[in-house]
Image (cartoon, rainbow over all chains, first blue to last red; front, side, top):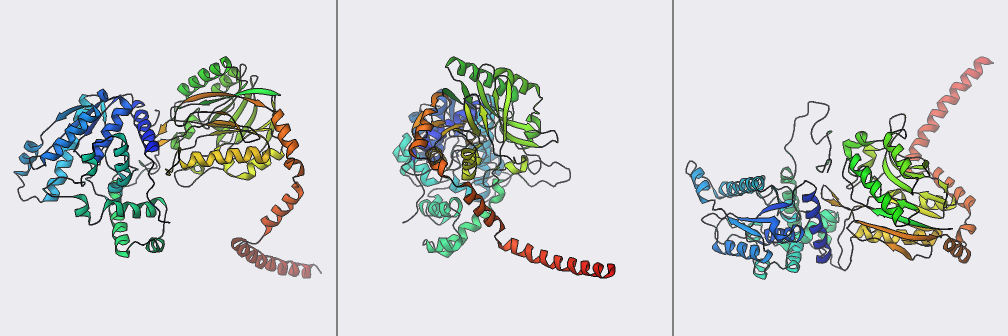
Length: 274
Length: 312
């Protein structure tokens, strides 16, 4: 029997909605802000938050750059309308261009990371203005593969999707009513025309999700993965990606000099006293 | 004997004793109002679960004012509280204390401290070394905390020690999504255990789980009272706060044990003998120790021979 990533949309939806409500309200706030890209992850995060906190407590912010596809903005607006949340558009072109005027030779990667981090600062600024938390949108697939910008789109206060593979995100998105055109389209970071995640990664989400599920969740060994039909090169490439992006999933390394060092022998839950 | 058991399926605040104590008070008042004779609170629900370095800060000696307050509260309703107990030699235990009529009647210190996967209990807690049923005004009962019950030996000992009901305070995290399942894997497994133990040992299983989230980890609730025939007397909501009360009629223990006198027929000596044999069975590690031991013994005996010679 072929093992698949388990899909249970009713249960996931129930858990994630209750997670958002619990983790937000215990901090003493009722609101969240979320960056809306027009993609399935941020649309789903926003819809779950609207369900958990009521739509009036969710602010979706669209932050296009001049080269972003107009379709992305249209989809983001569609998601905001569908979930009945407040929305706001902040064009990041001036602040990005002002910076790169000084560094005109910057490549796509630097520009992409810079945009992700500028968007992060806007979300955090509005979270302060609105007494809200920043809602995360990174899913487990991209977190494991390191396909995200550290302190950019990876930054958030609460992330309902971080333990869901992309395959699961699609299924839940469909169930909660994320518009079909958003669920069906090819995932993209939208940094240049025609860019797609799967094109850049070199494999499909469905393929890699099954591999990740067996490798990470089910603890299959390399030989078991080979027996399950995955090409060795694919297994090794994915394993290497996970290892090499581990730094993105941890706090910065701290030089230990005292008896109690943060996160090593100074260990407290984030929900300390909450 | 028939009595009413309530389960407070609460969402405590992590590391906030005063607010959780207030929650206890509120639930005990509610229990009294709803006619509960005995109330079960979840594991570590007076402190929160993922305490880590907070453990020494929320630990209570049995002489602490909070414990005095709990004693007072038990004049209304008997209850099992879940908290961190500090011993006189400064060990910290994941403990469940049974309060009755203004007194502590039993302390159970969790024996099996999960330290794998998402759990880190042995890093922070000392391990209990006792499994005892005890007499309450409702009859003989036992308290086992969460993971304790994942070891069938604990329920077995409790049953042989005369328990007519096992009360299990729990802080069980939801995990594992499977298709076609209304609840997560952990909920499914617990319900299987509760029912299997109730039927196998012919007793009531009273399972009190918490809800809420700590650092993203949710607790699935679903507290329940299962009677010796495996029927649910009461069932709480999944994933949400709740308060349930159910009737525990010990007559049904008698009925079950009359129909299936498994405990009567249990051969304790046989079990002990076989366990002794298994304990002595040479595992690889034990074999190494044995070989080392026999070499040392050899040395000792030649020394002894030497001294014996001298003596002569």
